[in-house]
Image (cartoon, rainbow, N blue to C red):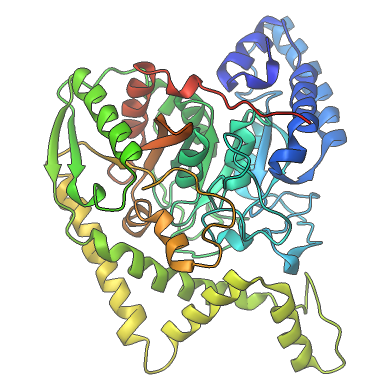
Length: 492
């Protein structure tokens, strides 16, 4: 039995029986990292010694729980990986940027507090596009991450390190952030499960901001049950975070076992099956829709007429918010500082040297959209279109229970193929931009392969109806075998 390949729920079963220890699991993951990480490059920072210390402490807790016949915390002794945009107390958090190269947070993000309380063990911080701006993890200021299914290809982005680590069995689960698809798109390209919760469902406190009205933390896991488990732990109201929504968190793990596929109304938007989508992707997603039909669901073609405007709307709103959020990185209080005796020259040089090309491009786009004389024409207009996109989904959900589509129009592309073509890079997120603009949840699950590369099936739901899309995703997963496929990584 390869311990590193286990799901969370299977590992917990073995831990409960005392058949393995947390130290066994942690060493298995660290050994796997030693073997494949030189080829995958999923991690920026590893904390192996700390992880083993925490594993030994978890083993002592497990012994006590077994002896006293009490329930252990849900993730006690389970290794995890965290995207480097999420603050971890005492562990370097760079956001994939030179400007935060040596930043060590003095506090944990809320999601980290919750995972720590559940007993999970931090293995390391995963690579990402700088400040979560990108679709391939090539915009990291450190190195590119490689897709475990084909090391010459990208893992997607911006949470590419997290997705690659899960796919390569370098962790049991990971957290990513999704602003315009940055959990779901890499999940699709790496053949794992990735979920974006509703906006406000998971606290953003301690998450380094990109676009504050769009950012959400979400899990990347090996199957849907594990995604439900992680969401159960990280969801919930946080008084420290202004956009956190104070409403009850359902029993996600229990919900996935409820059989409600029969008579389920599944919306299939015609705007998500367009010219330019790879044939293998469309064929696999059409086959996934037929699986739902065979399980008793009814499919209905729906119209989301403002879908074509999602990309330009996103690339006005997100850069505008980024230009404001990234103004704090000036080299004065923390982070990278350029050497200069003149304060204004120091500020210019710090930002010029500290930020990468893509980040500077988006800051300039956003600043332009917010500037006097252009605010009404661009930013304000984009917010109006955002409302129309949300209304499209509201109307659709009056007649259907979930909406399905491809997660990405293509499979993983070659490293370097789009890095000099921003528009082609932005189009990689074509099917994952509208959901953040509308604030609704969505999940990507594996649904097949084209030329040996994974394909993702996206399931969307009403705002704060995560349990329904988890239920549908789980039913689909149980009827197929795609989630059980593993990449073979040659070790040199």
